[in-house]
Image (cartoon, rainbow, N blue to C red):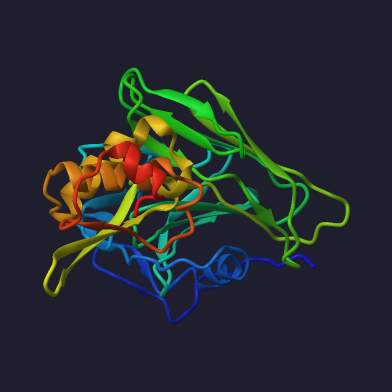
Length: 312
């Protein structure tokens, strides 16, 4: 079954900046049916630019209007990176669907719609919606990274960018693609200089449209909550992002600790630091915990002793 993406709904309104508000619903629905659930941030128009922020307002994402690409910046870490829309696509001005999906419709003959979604944790999903077997199935995403950054593939097929000293800059989750029946379609990444290239297979059994999705992020920590435990003191609950839970390597441990302190107001003490490093270094055993709990009132027994007791 080939689904033809139709024209903008007559209910869509054009705002003062020329953006289509309420458009792109058909593309957003295709993506919602295929993509993993994730709470989305809604972009707003600011000085002619579409901008969305993370839940804690630390990460700001600017989305392109006339060509160019997305830019991500984290005020808590100082990280700034950019990613271009796929070079193989040709699209028009953005339409903003009601769920916050920013849709770039294919120009006539292009055959591939592009959509960008900013997740509440500040990560970004860039989807390609491939409408037929004759449309492009390989997509090149130029990356704009700080000088000296190193791009490398991870064992699970994802990608990580690190600073020359090993600090985490950007992570890209392993690729996925699905056809119109919700079946997995083989897909993979490769690196070409400073660009990420996603290849999507075209099996004879595949039903179109297909949806493919690089999902990238620059944060290791989503949020930190603080609670007073009666008679003891404060407990900090650290909620890592997907990259903090396992996508980033061991060298990012200090960057993650610094980010947690910045986002949660966690004081620099030996016991809190050692508890955090234990949780980080104990991955994947701690990966599936909803949060990493750090107890300011816990006696510092040293990093190795915390590791021996599984961070307790």
